[in-house]
Amino acid sequence: MRQKELEIPIRVNKIEVVLKRLLKSYPKYQEISDEFGRRMSGYRGEQSLRYHLTFLKEKNYTIFHNLRLPDISGEHFFEIDILLVNPAFIVIIDAKNYRGELYFDDTFNQLIQTYQDTRKSFQCPVAQINRHQFQLSKLLETFKLPTVPPIETLVVFTNPNAILDASKDFKYSHKIIKSPSFISKIELFEKRNRNKVLDKKQLQKLSKMLLKKHTPFDHDILAHYGIKEHELIKGVRCPKCDFLPMVRKHRSWSCPNCHYSSSKAYIKSLHEYILLYGNSITNRRLRDFLDIESVSTATNILSSLNLDYKGSYKDRTYILKDQDLKSEVNLL
Image (cartoon, rainbow, N blue to C red; front, side):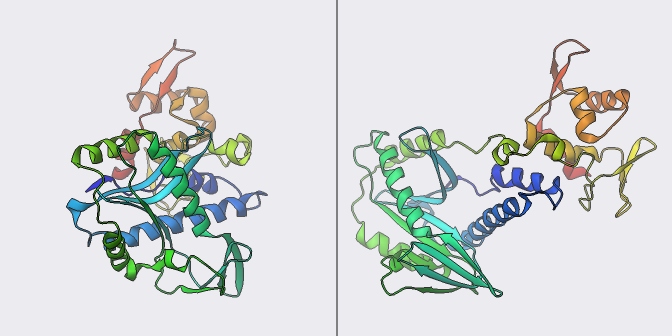
């Protein structure tokens, strides 16, 4: 049973919008691009692992995707790609979609990737997942369950072309697999965790508490990277080819790149506005973000969206509705 479905995390969506509105010459562009690539790679890894999850007996497992949970200090969060909850045990899964040759170096606790004559160093994913195991164990103790189930950990490499290797003194090879070995590994966990410690009512309580504790990343992404508002490219993005900015012509927007034209092309850009700034917007803020000079044009856009608002006419703040904007985007 899936308690939390797989979807692109909001942090990934925010990073993508930032990248699309920054010049490639921006000093931190490559750093932000690298993070986006890593997070999208992880998401694709989870996507490909979904096939193997279908072989689990549905009645025996509750599946959570992309949980972001607070540790007991209340100051930090930890993110779990996939969490499997069974009456007898729990499995934390970290899905990786890395390509090339992957070498686990125990001496310096790192993962070295070699791909297309380029070498990169990453934190060892086993070290990270072991930390998550500790943090989850401490968090579950606060749920006041009769017994905290044993927590297993697993790093799954989903790219079929990845080549795994490790130093002779690497101690955690048993925690690392490629996705075709997933079910056999779960069966091993089942064999060594035969005692059910949670009944149906306790499983429901655990699921409810995990969902309650889940805290999506919703921070100010611009502040996170130290990006000033004037450093972003303003204007309406083409809904078809992503070109920015479109040109305003005859009460419509036209794309110089693919020649797509629409009077509602701004809808997708307003969805981007929400990811960058939140759902509160004024006439002035809309004009600035969409690069519109006319006050009346901005007023007509806001009126057409039938938004809730607060304040007097001159100081009016509108509330953008993300779900409504997404529906409109699908119609473009």
